[in-house]
Image 1 (cartoon, rainbow, N blue to C red):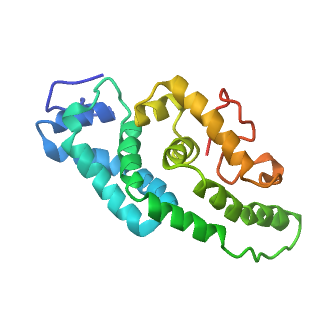
Image 2 (spheres, helix red, strand yellow; image 1 turned 90 degrees about the vertical axis):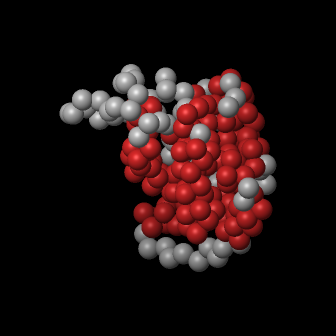
Length: 213
């Protein structure tokens, strides 16, 4: 739902992202509400991929680009997350060498963990797989990591990931199926203790299986 340009919904109803962006076209300061709503999530995603320091820059640049391009936003979309994650993914692509170096460093991380009972063992087993996950992610292409992690870490649906990447949803499904299979080939057989992968991926690599983080 949209409202007249430059205005917000009546008091008592929270404006959706499309309404905020539309209103910001004539009142730029309103775009700050979009930042407040989504900046933490964008930063968390970027930090998981690049580390906190570069995540600060990626987050700031994501919203700068979004502000400058807000006149192109599809106002039929009331949730701006896919749009913002798509911008962030493009910016992260400029740091692909840094991301791969970080993943390789994580893959070499020590695995010294204390084992004090069954629960601690299960948690330690999961944590011990993180270097293997990092090594496997480092072997994916930048485009493959973008797709996989938008679904697994940003918690986008297939449809939302398709909008973020500007491709058909069928392409997302088929590519994700291939990427999951490729990731499996680079992981040890026991990478998913108790059926749960540290990446947040479902053990089932069927392209019809939704993924949650």
